[in-house]
Length: 115
Length: 111
Image (cartoon, rainbow over the protein chains, first blue to last red):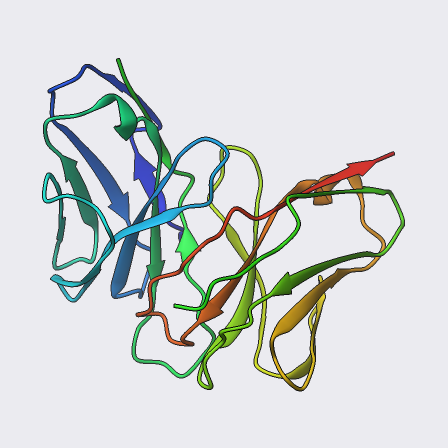
């Protein structure tokens, strides 16, 4: 069983550019969530996808968008990058529809720096 | 969503027991309490989850009083590798719920 993987590991962009971050869910998981973690802060929920549909969104502007593919992998797209978008972006997968514990499995993250 | 309050930081020594308490006065009837651990430059990792009384697994214990307005994560005999940030979360149980993280407690274990 493979864990959650994310690519790239690190990324440097300039203001106004666009970026796409990728995530491969843990095998068998049908739900993926994205979080933004600024330095010294806890992760903040961006949005969640369940079976290719957006299933909830945090307090982030529309320039943050996402996709989930039939194989449950996912992308996070950010347009018109701003300096404050510099953060660690975390992807987490889980298996919805179970009565088990609320455990989301996180990837190692993508460190985005906006200059 | 229930808000949580926990100490910003704690210090301990190897071999000691560490207890981190989290307050969640507005916890809802169907909310569970979950703790995550995060090492630098890594994603958070699930430690333990509970609803009431006491839960124990191979790495930690979780104590929840009857009123459920607080909870205590207990780490027995910590080692240097337990140095991390610990987050207390409250919310629904299924994997379709977004996780709401606070600022966490930074635990520093000294030799």
